[in-house]
Picture 1 (cartoon, rainbow over the protein chains, first blue to last red):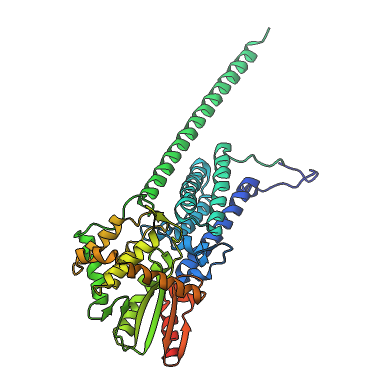
Picture 2 (spheres, rainbow over the protein chains, first blue to last red; picture 1 turned 180 degrees about the vertical axis):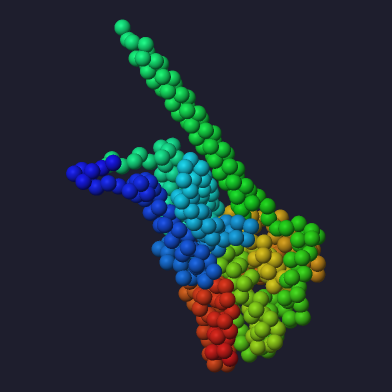
Length: 162
Length: 271
């Protein structure tokens, strides 16, 4: 136990179990991806012409082309909405302690990464158009897969020095 | 020489160290098993998602006389039956407003408009005689795609126009949009076009095949394209409404869900 003469104040136990840098990074990229997916879900239900997009494709924005393609839905559910649900689940997994929580987080990120890799392939070779928002989400999921893998392999974060 | 007590302490420490090492090994093993399980589940989920996504590389039109084909035809027939058709025109020829629809059968945004907004327009405004729709071709999706030296765009548009010779253009176009796949993916083959024709019971197949070779239909497609170019149209669908009060182009928002209100508003302005 730290005394009144210690050079640093005593850290409460709950605080020591608080967010380490890796978890903060995961949180940041998850929130970023969540906002991206939320925007894509919003425009899916309110009209693609609202999409802010720099690319052009056949008289429309390239994002509109991608979001109107047959790959933009999975059994009728917009993939943007599935992405949104995935990011929320990833966020929730951060609240689950121990190896199970870290494994769930990694599993969700890995699934998202794999499917976004496939969708990016379809953009390049089937649709011949790119959607910056989709690529942004794919980028977030790539980083999240790496970060959640490190978090899982590292185990419990080291307690900060008192 | 170590005392008996020290020997006991050393043995205890060694036992504890061995137990800790065994616990660490077991924990590592559990974690690796958990990791393996997670990876297997994630990969399986990805494979299933890819398999059920719209991304099958092959395929084409749905099978003729299948339950799916009959259900789709019935849906389209309910929408169009009883409405006069002539060539690419749908509706009463004397309707006060004409909506000219510049489209490309492979354009996914045209599909969204045709499947989401057009049915309401047909029901409320075409069926009631307020407006008629004239379809014209404008290449946006597959302008540079060729099969056996022939333009895929011209082939598909002419196939639909040939159905129009039997006043069934809109049946063909509706079937095309419902079964549309990724633009430029090469799915529009002769087989695909023939399959669509086969799904229209009233279409005389031999006549349709003969009409497809009529150069005047190709000229009609090329004439439409020329008109789109002259009017400097930027994309498909472009919807131009001409009525007693003048001419207006419908806003892009008509392709969105609930886009009918924007189209109805444009209709009111020119009526």
